[in-house]
Length: 531
Image 1 (spheres, rainbow, N blue to C red):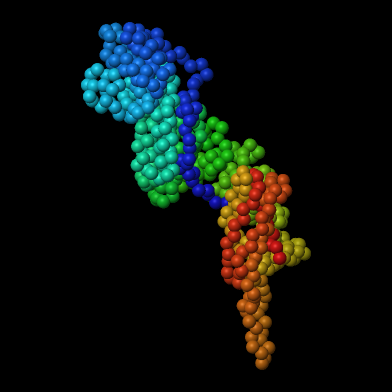
Image 2 (tube, rainbow, N blue to C red):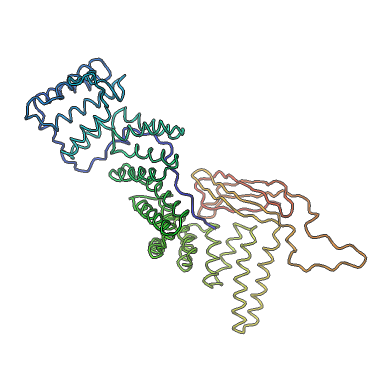
């Protein structure tokens, strides 16, 4: 039976590059006109800055940057444009921050300030402050300030150091680096992303949600960050969903609604597909059901029923399972049918569609599906019992209609299907189906049920003067079970195989198995027990 999937993982390994942090420019960006107001000392400072930029890392750069700072530290006259001065000072401080041997703090005098030369300056905070002046006065210059905030080595080093420290579980270091990155370039989501993950690892869910939501909002302003936005919405939604599942009453409803809102935003991000889409919709539906919002839940899969070919089979299957769980059997049947149109050999869809047809009393449709089911999953008694149940219902209906001959035939079929399942010597059940681009992993359990094979037969009377017969299965020798698995594509063709053998089993005992099949993009599997 398909189950609700695990929530998305928090931020994993990630390397930030200059291209990743650059702001996404609009198709026809308005001109940044800050240069039009530059004159006097500010104009002279831009000439020195140009020389420093060309000579960065050298003593010439340090000398010229000191000149820039001295020229723009104070206005030459009352008519000097403060926004232009702030921009040039921000450029200079940003270049200072990226010079060899210069850290996040320095003596003001060492950078060229004439006032309070012995005081310490916080370069990151100062860059942020002067660029905020520019961005507030001239929003059309935000791309220019973004280059000096996030397009240089210091920011890239801080962002990558934060992510690497997080992945190494060095939370204090990750927090420091991420805070610096976030202060310097708040228009990038990476700093807030890492701060959210640090809080999560410290079990501070409220702060984790705060930072992840902030990162999602920031990422939503730039199309190049869409994957980051998806991940942050998924992370925050996962926390709310977990809290809803653990809560009760009004608290459960409130948390579920918050989760539903975040997952709704996730699946609405343009070009969302794959696990983000079908996993996001699955958790969106789970949140809606926890909130008691069945109306919106049913709307969440309307598009899948109307046009199933436009969606991935996992999306259809997840929605079908949720519809079945809420007794929306007619909708579930359509969704399972849509799943099988795309993936005809999917074990979960076949099993669940047979169950759904039974619930709808569409018994004549059950055995064709069960026949397909046992072709891929031949050693599960439950599968055969589905066929037996369908024929039993058909027999009862025929008997009610006084069609005695038909009823007798259906009863014979009932016994045939039941007997097939009951006489299976081993029962195979599954706990894992994990397809990927390069392999398929299938895992589960094999139960030895050789002692159950004749369990429906009446016990024989002991012959006078002889000891009673021993119960079936007591003298059966231990036996290992060999399973041959084949990974299948959508056409049902085998694209890889793997054989696994369990430990030796005795009646009533079970053993776990795991088969890793080298196969690209498998969508289903089948197996046989090798004698």
